[in-house]
Image: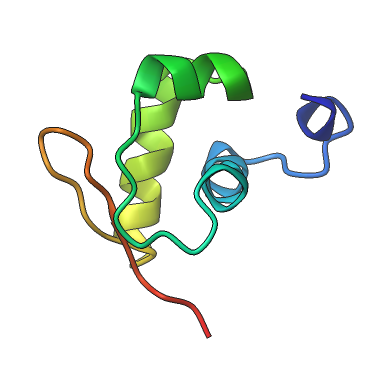
Length: 76
């Protein structure tokens, strides 16, 4: 995507958070098809999972289940 090409969001963590907000606006528990999501946002699966772990460590993602039903913390 052009956002990555222009270096507007340089970290995978920030880019993933942005992509989740675009694809799943207002959803606190999105179910994600990882392969489709990664293809759409030009991420490798490894980068996706690493960025997801970073988001969890920052407290933005509350829980990650085996099926990737994410529980995102509501932001004010």
